[in-house]
Amino acid sequence: MPVFRGSPSSDIKMKLAICNETFRDHDFPGTCAEAARHGYTGLEIAPFTLGNPEKLTSADAEKLGAIVRDHGLETVGFHWLLAKTEGYHLTDPDPTVHARTFDYACHLAELCAAMGGKVMVWGSPQQRTLAPDWSRLEAEARTVAFFQRLSPHLAAQDVTIAFEFLGPAETNFINTAAETITLLEKIGSPHVRLHLDVKAMSADTRPIPEIVCASLPWTAHFHANDPNLRGPGMGEIDFPPIAAELIKGGYEGWVSVEVFDTAVSPDTLAAESMKNLRAAFR
Image: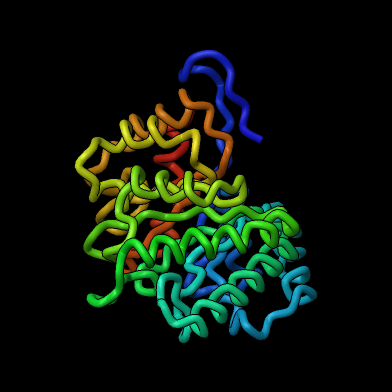
């Protein structure tokens, strides 16, 4: 666990991870080796990179988790939960879709736990966006019921959902930290919390450090990146004030690098991100 003592200038240990799809040219052991080589201690995993997650068993996941640990890393958990899937949707009024998505979420929680992970970031904008003829109030009620029903299964696996709000350019359902917290209050589960992502926060009207400060009591996970789709400190967002709020608030979760710009080499993205994180959290 991170250690926070004294002022932000004290010697502070922050848990730094990176998402595995960053190293797109490597197999899974190679990805683990690259993450460790760059100094990260955690690996966050997109399930679709493991093949077909629907066919993975807990035994398969345990073997993958062992590979992570063999490279001196911890499995942080999963993100991009519904990416590159079909037939799943969080807010769809069709009860068949709702039930299928619930079963898949339970399966992912089991896989995550088997790998040693504790967090699943629920973003998936395309699989939660409301159709024009859907009632938002009814969609919110379905979402609350979904996570309330999922919560005992999460508790049994010791896994926490970190719900990610996303900007209006990506989805029309839950666009701010404030909206997410209102949703979490209705869900009322310690295993369904908030996820903060720098790129997503940049779409809000409030300054990012202000959002971080107000949201930390609800926050289970944090993505460090930039609206330009690169790593922290690789764009216009000033990352040190954000890091200062995490430090001041006693944040004890992972800070995980999530990048999207495939025009930049994985080695550059990982190295620059780590350099900037170390400078921000030193």
